[in-house]
Image (cartoon, rainbow, N blue to C red; front, top):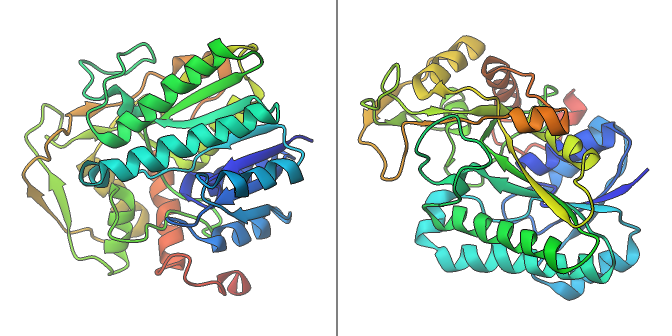
Length: 345
């Protein structure tokens, strides 16, 4: 079976995708600098899949170190997750985001070309669409990011498109995620932000276990059913399976394709809170505060292209994701800083 290099494979989406790859019989080699992830995630994925994972702690910008992996491992394809990912932080640290996300991808692609490994799945983002004029968002919408994080994804997308035109042999699928939430149903792997969470679901779960006190809901005067922002929340396991589908349905040689990965429908912030309370039996205190600059009222995907060409569709509900997020957080109040949990299970 093919061997897949997964960059950022110890992270939230990366670790869930590695698990699905192993379940499908692929061999996996992970490179990750562990700047926003944990080696414990890899250990737990090995435990769940009962398979070993090759691993190197490498920053992708270290070409010499990364090249050793390409020489040592007989790789067939690459799934590229590695990168900084916080929108707000990207606004305050744009140089770090441009350097880390773009330079690392250029070095990765250079090595892939040198070693004639030209099958690539790239982890992009719905942030490349910026503030869309309407919903649902199709892949044909303009690329007009409104923050440095989204801009790095847009630049990398353009690099990859140019690659398919300039050098023979490349097959590239670009996956634009909407809002990943949830955790593996085992409760052993999940989202473990290093600091105060940037995303809604880990913030909610940390309130539920008593680590945080109250949720700030940014605006209740949007033109939506309850006035709060509406987003397309996709279960991380469905998202991981989308990468398998993208790997198994690569475009023809010398071409690329972009796909939205979402559910195709939106859920408001207040609805998400209510669903989590139903799933967990815990009350989530919140307060309404002013809108954040740049937030849009509604953002959800048209996912018909992924249905038709990748034969993939999200199957889990937001309630499923809430249950699984709660199972993860309840069992891992301090995230991956509890390495003995597998013994308990």
